[in-house]
Length: 210
Image (cartoon, rainbow, N blue to C red; front, side, top):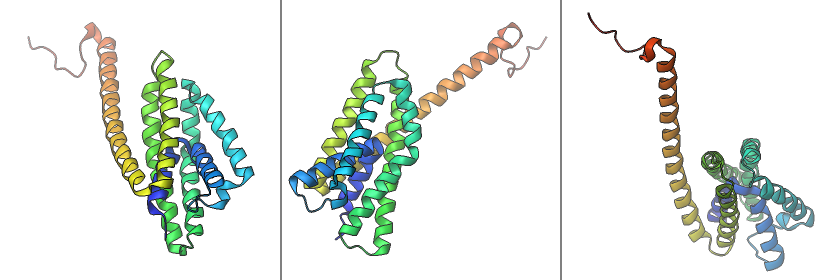
């Protein structure tokens, strides 16, 4: 049977930190002998690569400028990893080719959605002049991913509900943040236009009648 709940939760988590997802799944499968986790994720080479890449993201995530650049680069990487995890899970479940394609779309699509939310929210956090908010946000992401993946392995339906609610809240917050940013840009644009116009008047405003 196709583990839809586990695929969805893993996809959402992959959009935040795909290397942590691979590492946690692989360790749980290797040490806990969890049958739902594909053997491909338990290979020492996969675990070693995931650990190195996770360490890189752990460090970069604490540095605002590097974190934003890292997120841009991973716009393509995280959905691919989320889809790849879904594919190996579908293969282990002996799913049909059609179901495997659907699993890849679910894993990759949910990863892309959470990546967009994560990247947008971190842009606002990274703009803060003090470093503590960046560190707190990065640590919260790491702990949240590890907790969600662990919950998904042992309680997949509950984890899928948590992931869906978190993603919905994130999308709503992202939409609000985007709206605030647009309004701020419009205010700054209007202010520049007023400063450039003669006498500081708005050039769009009608001239006074004499």
